[in-house]
Image (cartoon, rainbow, N blue to C red; front, side, top):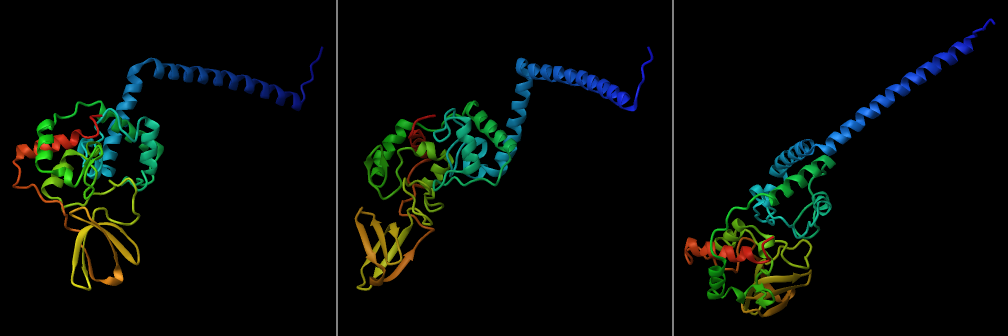
Length: 289
């Protein structure tokens, strides 16, 4: 029997052969992809290599974006130490990634520049690696530091666990919030940097614990830490703990002193060993995490 092959029949045959060939190619690719996935899951070396690459990339990013506040190797500074197994504000990787992306509003942690997903993943990997690295031994003796804290009457101005005065920042969790280097500088050069982001309720646009000197029109003076201020009044707390609310129209001079501190310097009043002890005590507040 004679088969008549028309142009349309030839086209259909070619299309059928092509579809069969493409199906075999797709099957081969799927099989190869499945092997790669199983390899990545089943062989620890592959995931470890990827993790190591993320950690290294994160270290570079950390040096550019984070080291100013959090210190080298995450040891802490004006920002909290990050070389801990447990981070208070970032209990898991998702929370840490959210902080990197969005910051912590009104708590001193700004949003970083717009970061890519890969950069966020790398920073998370590096910060988590810091908590798995042995921390350098703490200099000083925390128990002796506690005794020095009491001897120098630091509680007159600072609260620890609900006890103390309110002229200076609360120190209950200062070991979590600040690094040892920052704490030591605060003891010997208190005017170098005013406390920042330590208040539970933030005053937008205002420096915290700013010393202010007010000379009234009757010649009397008040000097203390600014508690609040608006267009018409200013509120201060003096060194005795007394609260003053002053109408600005009754003041002759209102002088803000951003480069000074009401806290006395301990430089020359304590030995290096005593400073180490006091820093060790302050670093222990809030728990070792």
